[in-house]
Length: 324
Image (cartoon, rainbow, N blue to C red; front, side, top):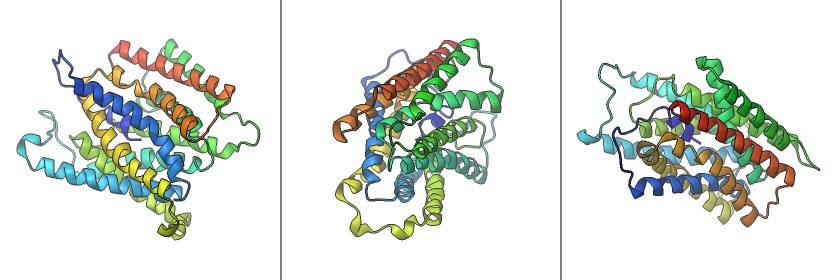
């Protein structure tokens, strides 16, 4: 879940009148892969404790990405530099900024989703996480003083109504996992806004690697404090759970992130931001197809309202020409 924090760190290549097939292919990968990670988390949770699983995902993916970016920076033409006249923050400051973002996004954000999906259907988790742009808008208002026009407040109100429908317990459904995912989404929204204010490397991929390593470290601490590390037994990890973890490390973190960077550099931000309301559709569909999840009519209705409100927010930002 590093995608939204990256949007503020990336810059478009000016003057591109033609967008190649690779950019659209990269966006399709983002749609499909990030939408499918909810299914992979649900499967991996079956025999791997959630915090330990998420820690393994981000420590591994972060280490691989950091090494790859380090090798890339050894080529002079591949080095990212700060804009002229702008002093780059120190390496220590960069690590501090990325540690805060990685903790909010990956440890508390994605870690909370992993914890909740032990019992919560993957499709419902994805629909709740679709509310992140709403929390981002509110955090932007509080932290940056960004004005929200009437249409924005209408979208926020509509989205909160949809969340209320989604969060309403039905039958024997537990309330705690729903609240955990909502808390994780709020943490993600706050972290995404802070990412634009904290020291960061010039290269977004280097920043993502730092976020993963920092978030993975915090998740390891959470796993130790909750006793998960003592319960991890490789002999009892099922093949589907292991495959789910490998999918989260490879396609879910490394491939999709790279494709996101490619798409965001070559396509309009508003086009790339469509993943925010495509991913939940993918997640719900895959959950029904492979896990037999059957969302209720109220869940589908609430999810549709949330997705519609997010679309309203993103369209408003596109009209203002800002980076969502």
